[in-house]
Image: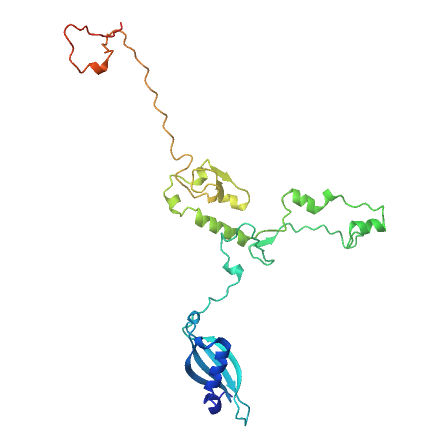
Length: 293
């Protein structure tokens, strides 16, 4: 049972405890003695302040003890422990919980757990023969070695090959949960509740730049194909919209200039020397004019 009162001899061994911590870390980071607390019968921990600026709020803990009926106090351990206001590192979080969208960079690999709830088995058909078949639990070489005349099924007749041609060769596909999570992300980023969609003249469902997608998500989403739109190349909700809608406005036709009219019935005087037109003209000097009829 833990004693509330520290052992007298262990509590008086302050110099022994200080010497132990000084020998471990140096005298510069060891502060004054704070207290002596009883850990058990004849086991006492001495606390010293930590003067290391990198460990604010921490303290040195030196545990000493003595054997029954012995007067010599011995050293147990020296440790650096945090106090109530100590600066601590944040709680460790697994990488799978720290990962956020956009963290994956070139060359990074993101493994997917076998129990990922976002995925479910894809095509479940297998190429296993009937349990009583000669081909069961044997490969083609072993079967041919036993009976060279046996007829093996052609590769193109196997279920896996047919499934791959039909696009069903993936081992796992999005589950209903994965589909809903993807739809929620896309709806949040490019959905009808965004400020851009609220001010749009029409929705993407009537836009000529919308590229349809297949699958069940194609009923509510598509891909924007307008290079001038804010969501070019992004999956957008059919309720989304922007000012670059294909039917938002029709560009007015450029005005057709009027035909050039030449009036050849009027004579228009034209000075051959415009720089002399501002000066005075002598009476005897003839006026040079250019006209046409």
